[in-house]
Image (tube, rainbow, N blue to C red; front, side):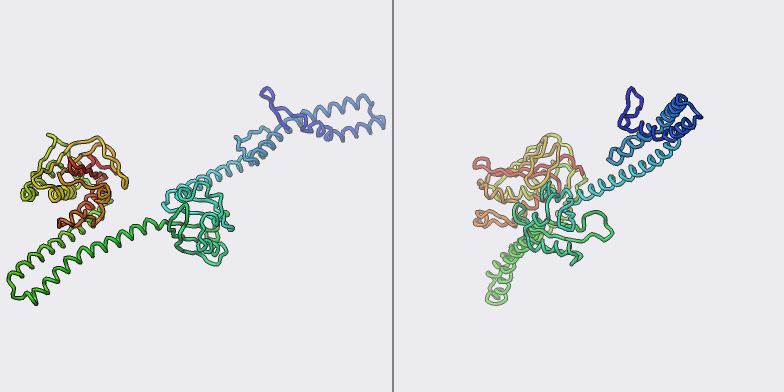
Length: 473
């Protein structure tokens, strides 16, 4: 072997260099022996001549042996994956071999780097996909999983067999059919028990025949739980809307039938029934308008507002519009605001609708002969929400307070649910669609703001709106 001593390459003892020199000098030794036997050369001259040849062979073979040993060490390191710097040899023959090896080395290093880069790129792309993806071999062993799959099933998912991950027999049968090439692809929905406790939709598909590697199939998973929840919400929403519309429609239909028959000539009944029908039609109109508002806000949910809005002007405009309604209940609307307030980025129409809904509710559900107070101020940050993300930075705070009865914590938690109304309001015959606060919540979500509610016996109920000063993507 080769070693380096004091910066100079030398031949190690176990390199069999001496044996090679003696073997190379053996023909000369035989010739000298024959010359001695034939008395053409004296023994001393033969020994001296043979020694000279051995020394010459040592001097001649030493550089070549050193470079061959360096070449051997370099090739061994390459074989073991130790990619050292390229070897540089001085001898022409050895240098040509080294150049060929270095060329091969550069080719495979470039190839390896390209493959590693492609593998990292493919892994990065898979990790950005929102749905879990698993790659499995012919035996059902999981060879790889993207970030969503690791997050759902655990970081060590790649060490497991697919049968040990899900306990659904239908899912295992579908995977088995694909792995056995009985089917090119399988689709099914199944329930994944603990710890997932989710309804899962799975797509199992064979990889193309020309794909390389041990993976033979890909399993794509989709969590149906959220979709089913949304579907149920939509179903409940339609059912509730139908119910809310059915009642006034049935009332109007009943009075129309009565006016056409038994009360046909009864002027007093006709006047009374027409007023009730007008009231019910007004309720339906309000309900439909609110439903359309919800739909319109939902459609613009992903579009951030861009216009500059003056909050003080909006609040004063709403107070002026509702002044007569407040006076009908012997109530006053008081505004407490700073002398100056910077304009914010917001949808002025939606903000006005939000403030008007909350102020209208404060008048409707507040005690007669009391005040509705609207306080405007700037705050350092928006309180966090449990259900959606809020914007960072400074915000405008609009607090709307009335002196109505205290709302229980159970009712407070459900106020923004669609069609939810307090039972005591129903008992008092106070009309409402139960959609105003749902609309307020949707507007807050679009603006990345927040809506909080507090209610006490002494201070009444306060709805506080937080709108960010600036909105950024």
